[in-house]
Image (tube, rainbow, N blue to C red; front, side):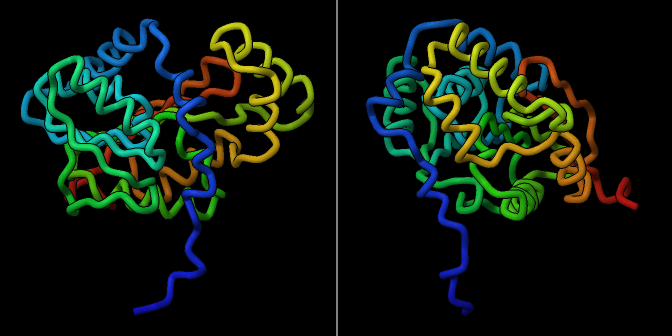
Length: 231
């Protein structure tokens, strides 16, 4: 077996201890938004769903309430602890897994839906491609992948303006400090929307929709083609 000392270390990008994780545990309408997204995605009782980068487990628990078998996956122990509390409080069963996009365990062609929100930007672009290939392999033919992430929707003709606008949006709407927003922009691996789209389609996904609706936010709905649909 090849040595894996060259493999990207996802855990150096955790950045979420118990104190920071508490930010994600504030009461808001996340459960309503999660249910709306899952309804749009057509989640059905008995589906196998993976939420990779599950955070505090709101979406995972909503999927479980809809009758899905859910794997709630996160690299951060603090976030998984919140997800388990969320599941206990809502009296649903979820399976938690301490792993990331590059390390989650899966059986090929086993999931009806994979969701990943605001996790892919933790990886450099080469490793994004590796992660997307793993997700593609985990999905059943014909199944969907729902991706949300922090991306650049335009070319960098005015990066200072773009970053400041995004910082202001998150400070006003999500309660993050300006320092945390700027640290993200400086130290993490958000990329251009067109790069994400090319990575997704080169992996083999069919791009159903791409929406760049909020400052530096991209939402993508993908489908894994069935064998007869693949060229």
